[in-house]
Length: 245
Figure 1 (cartoon, rainbow, N blue to C red):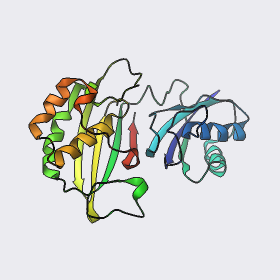
Figure 2 (figure 1 turned 180 degrees about the horizontal axis):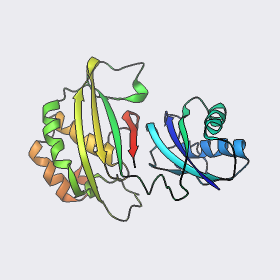
Figure 3 (figure 1 turned 90 degrees about the vertical axis):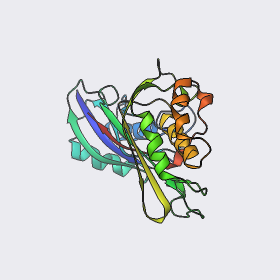
């Protein structure tokens, strides 16, 4: 038995998220079908992050165990020949049998991309959130510091989350203005709740619009109620960038 680790890139537009769905297409389900065609085996595929519908990935990590003798390079070429164009296996390697992509992850980095200008985009509409209101990026940077550290993020947890508790640790948040009106928000943490990144981004955008004040952020965190957070950012601006082990 071998344990195979995959580094996966995908555009999430056409999928109901990473996790297998009974009647909707998913990233995990599509890769499982390709593995079955390549190896003839029904395997268990573990992903580092259960990204939501419409969310993208540059560096999702997954692993599965197989009895197949196909070398890593052959697995990569074989899966890429079987997968649709919006899912690509960027790397394949053999790891120890006890490696688990989800359980062993030490940190994850997400990128959220905002387009902040007077007009939308035809080319990047699937990869950004168009916000035509003026955003005070300096205020957003100042407000973001309140999220750093280990905290109870109940106010930033979507309903229906099956996590046993809401305590998570954010290691860093970096906000940078790019060209053509784009704003990149990178959030690194040890783990995240369902919709947590999107709700944090929505709160920072609300702050940038002047609808709330910097001093309101600690109270929103302390409220520990989802209703305290103003907005959930849409999924298409979110990318899973990197998983560290």
